[in-house]
Image (cartoon, rainbow, N blue to C red; front, side, top):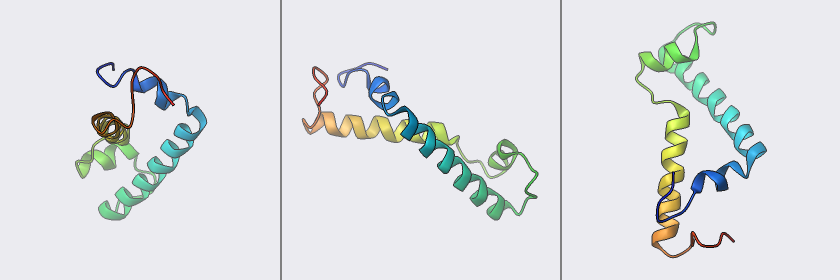
Length: 85
């Protein structure tokens, strides 16, 4: 996505290994929380448990938070899309 804050996906993807590691950890924690809330068996698929308790996909939540952070930095002039420091 591009806009007044530039191409933020390139910045986030630049951290490749960290992002993948964090995504796996977040998914694992979310799955355990879903199983605990729902009382489902550990063999139940993650998507099914998330759907039962109406949780959004973790990727969508992270993407939304990243957009908010980039917009906040840009609006406070903490980040210029012309040069990334």
